[in-house]
Length: 337
Image 1 (cartoon, rainbow, N blue to C red):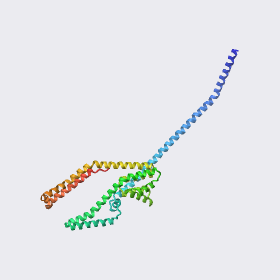
Image 2: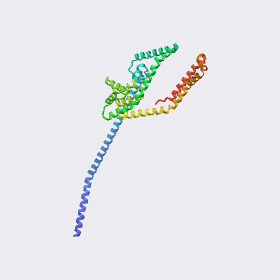
Image 3: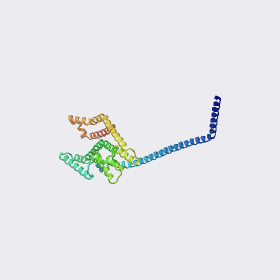
Image 4: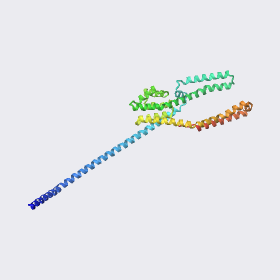
């Protein structure tokens, strides 16, 4: 009985092994074909994925090259505009200076007021009993020198106020853009609620847009009435963003930080150079102070300089050398940031 069971088990095992062998023989080629097919499909998918990655990389490279070319073209166009504007910025005519000073005066009225001031000073000098050449010199200085000097002082003062308020205006533009307002509305907000002289300059930008100018062109015209590097930076940022795109709020925010750091550096340099400026002022004023003290104590000692022709020559050469020394010291202690 036990032997019979072993025979049956051996027969079953032999049949199973034979069936497995036959199945392996007949199904091996099919399984191998399916395996090769699956491997080929995987390779094809990997190749398609690689081709997609290569195509995407190629598209990115082409997009970057196009954007770089567009940016280069924009910079070239900006350079041409800057060259054209630099010619206008170098305009030192009276009309340009009056527009930069913020005065609502025409050149004809300015000349009329200058002539009136010169005539008034001449009358005062005549009433004081001064010689004729002194009267003519005082009238000429009052008519041609003092008004233009005052105009230059007004321009510098207005530019200082603009530089002080301009970073705050840029911060307001940045916050407005981040809150969802368009750039045009942010500029209108500054033109209506900003501080002078920033308000008047941005009002010119808004008015330029209303007459048909684009925003970059309107911002570029600001440098004609406010010829400062900071305004030039702002117009370049607006022009590049309009042509090449980008995060405008971040660009303007970074520009505001740069302008504040620039102003802080300028103040630091001025503070460090105050000692040199004080020394230069003392050295420049010392000859005049000594001459005045000598004249007060011994008038006859210096009288020969004004009565003798050789004294006149000495005064002339002394004035020339003093002017050269003051000019050299001024260039040594003035720094541009």
